Image (cartoon, rainbow, N blue to C red):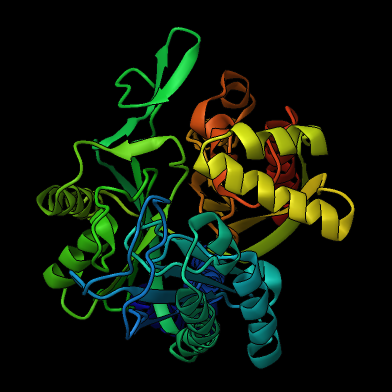
Length: 480
């Protein structure tokens, strides 16, 4: 805004000089062309500055359950929550360019967003705020110390009926809370400077340790990682910081205690908001499906990792920041991800008889589906979003729990601007392996399907289907 006002002041001065030139035709005519060219250049700069003004709005809401509830994650849990370490939040940032194009990012301290909740919120905001589906991304931090939302998994967890009722009621409340939050962020739109930068944090470690022909869930220091910490800094036109949006590709699973908390991501947001009073800090989970924080399992370690991540953001915002300018473009595609041929009824029956407790529950679930629907699904509707934020940043939001290979590959292939690849967005329902991870097997490669209501594993085309769709969407948002 200061730059625009300065350009406008220079524009006025040039107009006065030009009038003086015209009043002294003979003695100053030789300067006329030169001054006229400067006049045109500054007029163009003023217009460009006005075109590049963005609006940004921020909002937050506490979403901590008001009563004890079952916590999301860790199938071995036997009881609901017992208090809290700190509150859980939903937060939103809205952007609008000079042409009126908008994009709203919502972050949540939850294990995931279900497809049911995503569809309800996108329909509500389209009706109430005329926000297109492609312009809304809802990301979950994947804390395993937030409320369980997936009531359909009750048979997998053998939850008491009273807990299922609480989950459904909380989900209904969340649909309204998130819809209202989007409205609050849009109502807060005001002129803003938005910039991109990034830092690094080193506590994420690959967890797919090769042991012979198998891959086990243990720390693997030589496995692929993505230690990048992308950051959006949102400030007022006169430079006062209003918001920090930052990401990291790592499971948010330092803790497994029975108290509500946002794990390391929750502490990182706390530390940033304490250091910058009045600022809203928002965490975006990246492609951390095969990454764990290390070391882990204590509250002190969760705080340490949160501090390390907050420090990475602090270091990023004192380094050069790339201003985002130009237009906002958003696009979405629903990709039918294919499953491998599903198990037969005979195979499922054998699994009920011979499997472990979780395999038996999974097999029973699929048998019930066979009885009620006559078949098992062959595909799953997988949402992918791509946003072009100005000419400087491509933001990609993948659903499910994508492994780190996705962010590493897309950063290699999309080289025309800065790339931010988020996971855990819009529908968190299963792990999304690459072809390599799928063929290697292990928990992320297919074993974790036992803890879902889906058949599995995925077809070997999964990586190609996801990456090809991202490239199509990038081409779409970069057309203009």
